[in-house]
Image 1 (cartoon, rainbow, N blue to C red):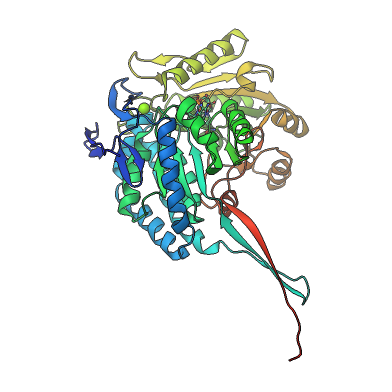
Image 2 (image 1 turned 120 degrees about the vertical axis):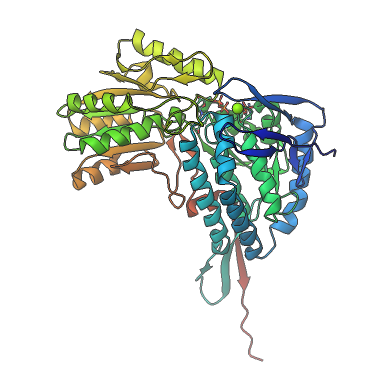
Length: 497
Ligand code: NAP
Ligand code: MG
């Protein structure tokens, strides 16, 4: 394998760094077998950042063989070896926090403010994965004195991981952290739109002492490189985050190849419910965090806002006032909350949803337009007086567009909130603890935020009900995705000699 050099990048905020451009295989940055490269763009300027080597089927083969070879040793070392490397990796990410934030702002378009949130969780999560290495225990089972029965939790082998463009480094950590903690090795494909931080973080993994072959990063197209991962016979598990449509393809490919274990983290259209007795000022801030954080490119975004009729007018007046204060623009600029949408396709798609909202009769409270003519910037947009059958209420928009509906009764709003094929997240805003607990029990969602929103914590599991996904990430629950149980039963013979 021929190694390829990094390119030196000067970022708008003065940070300079060396961006690896090769595929990351066996702890080296190497050229693709085909010699093909692809360009990476910055969505805030629409300018090319650099070219990267492009992985396809042959490279996935090489990467998987490398991961397969490394698995034998990595899966059997003492847990403290894995813990030491993961702790060191977290330390290095912390040391390089400013660089990583800037890479995310450059490549994804998100504001430095939002990127700081991501990198903070990445550090905490990788550290907690180091701690989990010595919790991967089985149990002894009392089956009487004739046998000793116990279980072991064993790693699965080589894990394929495919991640999206909205949280490039965060998704890298949610996939790599638990896989490595439990003794697996990985072949990870970042999204073609945002591959830079995955490669840079891989260079930190080398410095952290993670052995060759444990992590492979193969940037390339979903259709070729992604599909090769989904179908490789040596890959025993696939973890995917992205659209529901490709999530279905993942299950089909797993079924058609070797019945890989599948975990999916897919889309959402999460209800964020405001009751008459909610605290107005704090609720408005949580609604903003719910839909406009990360430019609205959040699978758990609180994009369906239900407001009870008694507070409807007052809340919307305040919501409009606060939304119009949000600073949108150059992700590197101080005070900017919302950067650029990440891809031109996504940008066009959000604009077409805004047009649909208008055409179907939803009322535009604020926003609705592109900002400037360079970079994919959008005004934070709020539609009000929406009906449940409006497209913007039913479909995931994945952008800074909120759809607000009015409701009267608790039972009514629960039924409307649950009337979706999705079930990722939900929000409740009330000062009545009884109401909050009752409603939280009745919502069909993998997470329920009460008087807060998008409030992720590395120890709290995250994942979806219904078509929002399978399995949980973060928390100790994430370890279940990466281990399998072996039961051992030993016969005990009594002898009198
Ligand atoms: P996507 O197509 O599902 O892409 C996610 C990842 O899957 C990317 O790495 C992509 O590679 C890869 N991929 C695409 N087709 C594949 C295939 N046939 N086999 C294997 N891998 C494949 O998502 P998108 O098109 O980027 O976004 C579309 C919609 O998905 C968004 O509008 C949003 O609704 C949803 N989405 C959800 C999340 C989430 O966090 N749940 C994240 C992003 C998007 P390439 O990058 O090369 O295409
Ligand atoms: Mg990019």
